[in-house]
Length: 124
Image 1 (tube, one colour):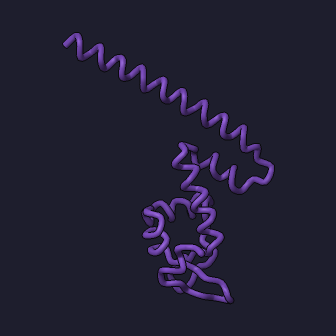
Image 2 (image 1 turned 30 degrees about the vertical axis):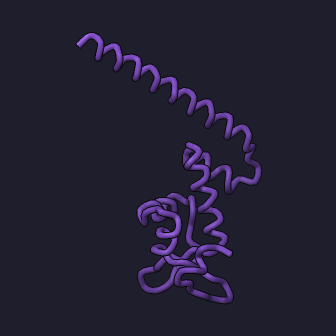
Image 3 (image 1 turned 180 degrees about the vertical axis):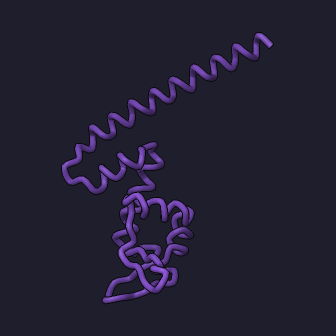
């Protein structure tokens, strides 16, 4: 059972939905993050209600969000994550390999920065 059901849950047509506030609390993310994901078609809420189109997330939406957060924590870019989650023809290993190469390059760049910083410290 999803943590969603511990919080205030809205039911409509036999499905259960969580509000933006509840989702943010459960996953430790900001409203701004959820709105960004919505605007950029990374994660759309399954339901919008009321005059202000309040957003509600289904259990399936939360499963997608968990995947998104897992991939973000592994250093993947949002474009890569979107491809991994929503593209049925995605070659996951290729995406992972490219991300790994990018991360290794970033590590190497940061090593060079550290070396330069150490040299500056020694000369000053």
